[in-house]
Image 1 (cartoon, rainbow, N blue to C red):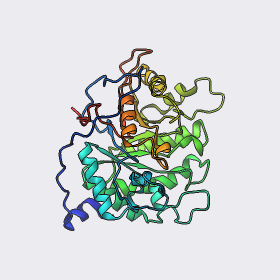
Image 2 (cartoon, rainbow, N blue to C red):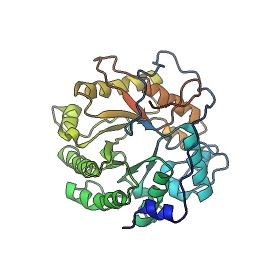
Image 3 (cartoon, rainbow, N blue to C red):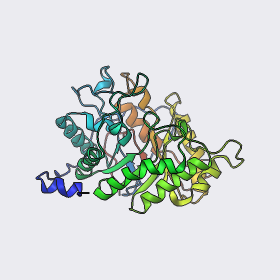
Image 4 (cartoon, rainbow, N blue to C red):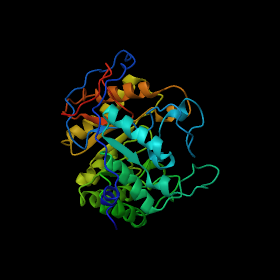
Length: 347
């Protein structure tokens, strides 16, 4: 396969210089009874997530299939629909990510390759080829981001695949992205607990995806539905602790999804429930506060980008105040900036 990055560069498309991050307006006042100070200086590491996957607001953003048709929610760019926006709007979004100091972008091959006519109860795919998926990843990699790729979706893949079936589906996508050098991180599936067999099957899938990712220098993160942090077998007395112990070092961590109905102090407390588990295991795995308000933002005026950025910041201010381990939250996927509006600078 042609190296997409080289093909793009030799075709005359040069990566523009990144503008320095800009100060923005201060965040809304935080609610009472929450932590509001980052417990550490976030490290300059690929594992620290600075992204806004659904909240960056661009006035006049056109409607795309599967996106919101309601204003002002339509103006919020969905990163996994990157391929559906016109090129000029893709570039505006890329530029705004740089201005905000964000380091990661998230894409979804199942959404890109899924059928355009996907039935009445499912969102449409883009009907793209794998080569087009590689090119989309390549454009964002060339723009200077860490590119994260979700491999499977409940809307496009069959329920309850075996480990081998999942490998047969996912490895060709991984291999194409890896060969083109356009990917940095993988997640086996969006909301994995909603369409996969719990216990040994899910563990086996995650371990195989993780090992395949690690062999190429990429990382592997898990994602579940709101409040879920594992998908262990019914009756397993070890519960979520045993699930992560079984994964071992083949998986790097969790992109945690919270529930938008929780108040901010409960959001922080729920994070601690898993944070201390990871800390007690020696921080083999890292926890990111990936999302909480996205569902509410899809079709409604509120919460908005500022609300989500505050939510991401407060999540990152959380620390283990129960077991007092040194576990930390490794960034946010719903946008983040300091309370005074200044960007998060990794050191």
